[in-house]
Image 1 (tube, rainbow, N blue to C red):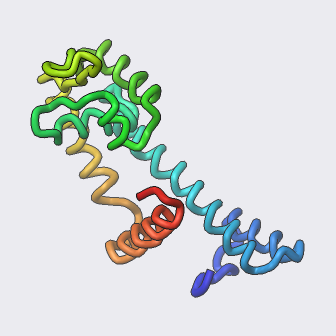
Image 2 (spheres, rainbow, N blue to C red):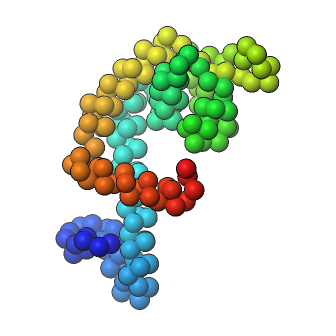
Length: 171
């Protein structure tokens, strides 16, 4: 990766892996790609662990939090299950599993669509709305407001990941 000092920290296992890739003769382009993929995967693990740690006292996983937050943001506090899964970019079965757990906890309800008998709506309850607001405040204070890099670096990271997502047909 241009501008990255690969010798900066001998403790970094990803930097060591990159040197091993280069020493194996696979070329800089392949080493760049391996380092990028491995770095993103490790960053995902780190960020998810931080988020899950903050959500644990609320009895939420990140996927359940995302669903509650989506419903709380929606105009009427409810969405068809298929639309919720589309917006969260997860398979309908994953959304259905999260919904089942949230129903059991009394945080959402399943209701028939008022005009389309084939569609089920998922609606946030008052308890769900209260919980997601508290959880959001904690995530804003302890994770999103302290992501672990400067605002400039965070913007650059988002731009780089957006480029990757776009090239992969994500939007």
